[in-house]
Image (cartoon, rainbow, N blue to C red; front, side, top):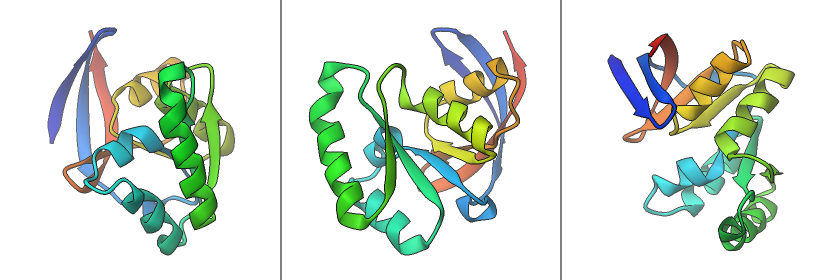
Length: 144
């Protein structure tokens, strides 16, 4: 399936192919983005804990407005025994890509900014977009 992502930085033609986080040895998960798409935010944490996937949640904390929810997500990570890191200087989807590029992992998010950041870094880290309860691997076709 092809899409055009239009953002403040421009647009990007994207091809989305069904994929699964289980296909990758490790994941960095944009916690605010993915949990925000679920009716029960704790479902993300519970699901990752039960899945056995090697996942690290990346939690937005770069604006003061993020801090109450970031604290809650840190508590949920502790409750479910999950790894997590705070993104204190930039959006979590961008930091997740930087970490994934460094560690050879994939990124799970709902935000096309992750794909843009991977292109900027000339990094081949897989970017998995969570849409409608399904996960798709995103591949950039072009940018304008």
